[in-house]
Amino acid sequence: MIIHVTYLSGYLAAIISSIIVSAILGLPLTPERPARHSWTPSAIFPTPVIALGLTAISIKLGVTGIYGADLGAVAGVLSAIMTAYFLEDIFPRPEDS
Image (cartoon, rainbow, N blue to C red):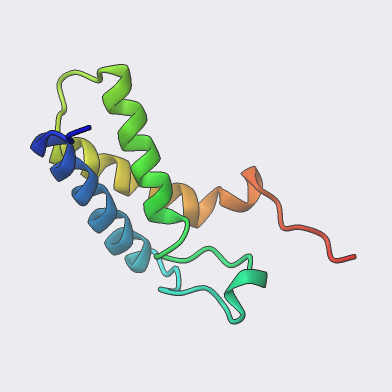
């Protein structure tokens, strides 16, 4: 399966814009140590993953009027805002047993 260049530029724009905006919003670049037990949202994870998902969903649904890198940048900004302010409301921290 070959990814079209327009889609690839959208995915790259989503990753880059999500990391930059989340760093501006004050999220740490990496999660706390040890990373496998950390529930701290960071600029590296889950922000770009959410941005890639939003971009892929938008492309699959056929969003018109905005395309490629612009779509990726919008998805990156939305994912950074969602991660910074709404992530713990959507996915609460697990309780320690």
